[in-house]
Image 1 (cartoon, helix red, strand yellow):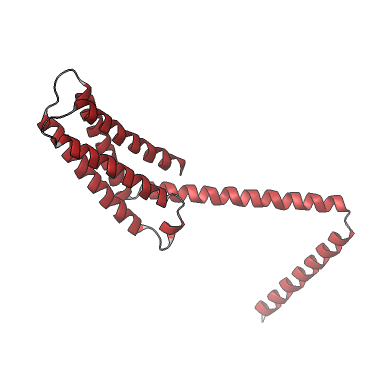
Image 2: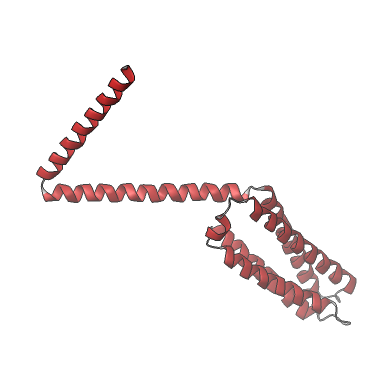
Length: 188
């Protein structure tokens, strides 16, 4: 019984308040309507900022997901091996074929692991989320460019005689694609 009386009282208060606001809005001058419009725009901007902050928190949580952390670690390994091989190829002494092939084998292995963990990471996301992420197509495109650069490097280290300048250029290309991917992740 008390609950019904309480609800009725709240409904009456709400109706009186809304009626009073409506009457007040009709009697206010036009410039105050502009102030109200400006206030609404400020609220909308605040909502957009809050949505952006929530999106940022989602991205932060996403980058801490275990599969994503592992994928990024494997990408760092690729960078390390590519830099090391590139430096050796640019050095004054002849490039060891065994060294070059071992480095490329590790680059390929780390790329495959990074890709595998990235795919597992994508499975952990909420349903429908991957298709809504703006950069996913771009990641795939850059991923394929990196794969092509690694394939070219692999082909060049399989030659009977190694062309150090070409291998150094291949390593630079791999590093360029890694840098492009890294820049894209920082923009998110």
